[in-house]
Length: 260
Image (tube, rainbow, N blue to C red; front, side, top):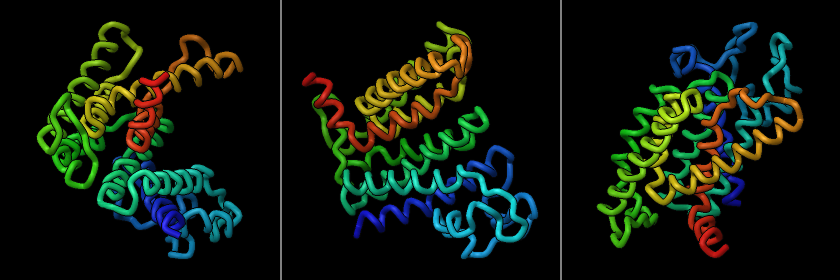
């Protein structure tokens, strides 16, 4: 029952993520106007906004004008719900789960905005980086140990986050200089944010997963003729996906890799 509850909380967060992904790139307020149909501009009522279910009930059409509802909306809602259920499986019903849920919601928002607009927004990454650094000493206090070499505890967690932030930022900055056009400035700042969120070991896992996944997807698209060798592909979603893996299963990935 707890997993069902976590899933539905996640779908509600996913609904808000959809609002963020639609409005932030356009410079619009997240609060006003309220939810409305982008075609007929009709104000949507609560029963029009039930995550996932309203899409099914309304048969993917606006109740008022019949315009198609983008498939992205229920997919993001359901995907975020699944991530929340996985977070509950990883952390149990705890403060760590709540913190992980916030991070996952952030990662989903970054992914959707980068996929649809090719942007990693400073107005998302920079405040999140400050919050991640302030939150860093608190991870051990909510049951998430983050060691830094032989240290443990709040100061070690802070040091790990700081080192991870520097490592993530410098790594992608080096790619920008060594291979112009290979990465954007947003990827550099996102690398720094993920290091602050995950710590030094976590950002290494996130980048490794992102590089492997990105390489596999790029190769598959090349074989299928969906992209050329020099076609650009947003890397932010792969970094966000790698970060989710590191957050939810970082210790398992590390144990598997070292034991391989």
